[in-house]
Amino acid sequence: MILVDTSVWIELLNGSLGSRVSEKELLNFATCGPVVQEVLQGLRQRPESEAFRQGLFALPILSDPLPMPHFYRRPRFIVSGRQRATRFVPPPIA
Image 1 (cartoon, rainbow, N blue to C red):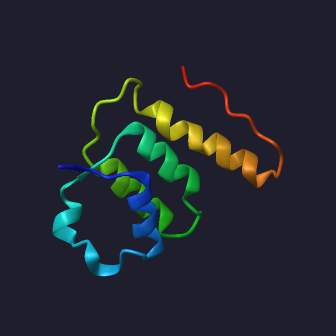
Image 2 (cartoon, helix red, strand yellow):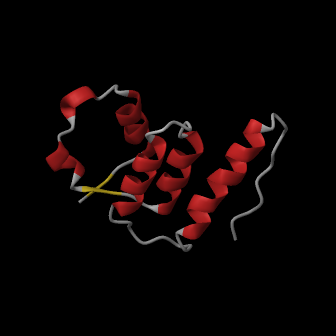
Image 3 (cartoon, helix red, strand yellow):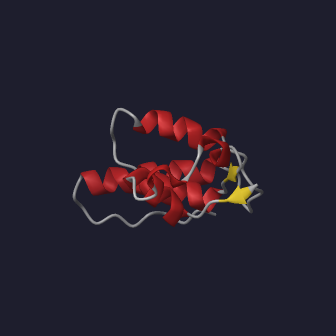
């Protein structure tokens, strides 16, 4: 199992890693709450975004100090604030 950092997800989504990551390797990937939050914050809204989101949630999730919903609800608030083009200060997680 490999805990994949946000920077790797960014390179995968941007196509920078190309075919250097096989489907077999993807099956060994794992994630955690903070990485999910960071990736979802930067995920552009495209038709394929929902499929990626579902795939991300299907990965094994390593234990976190907070329940997983804290990490996937927060990016929606941040993205919503960006779309309104206003300064948005997210509330604390805890």
